Amino acid sequence: MRQDEKFFGDQDLALVYIAKRLREAKRLEAILTAANLDYLVETDTYRGGFIFVSERVGAFFYVHPDHEEECRNVMTQNSFKPYLAD
Image (cartoon, rainbow, N blue to C red; front, side, top):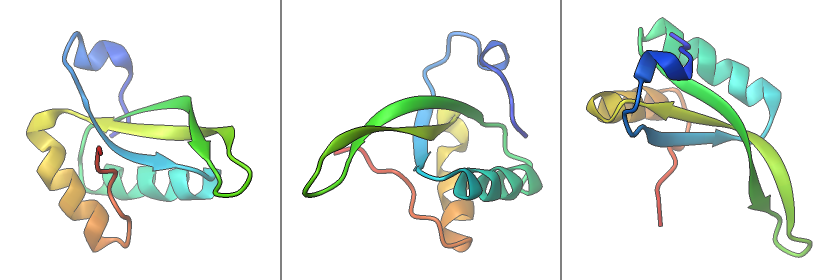
C-alpha cells in the first residue's frame, strides 16, 4: 500500500524501481498494493538517453529493507526489472 514519508520515519529505504512513464508507475503501484507491500513513491530526476543524454523526471519506488527481497520477487513475477545499484 502506498505510504507517505511519515509512515517510514527516519528509516533508510531501499530503492527498488525507477518508473520512467506514468502508466508504468501506476501499474507497479497496483501490483505492490495487491501484494500488500508498503512502499513510498517520490518524483526525482535521473539521467537518461544514449546519444542525447538529458535529465528526466521519474517515479522512484522505495520499500523498507526488510521487505526488499519480497518486493523484488513480486516485481520480477510481474515482468518488472528491479533497480540494481551499480
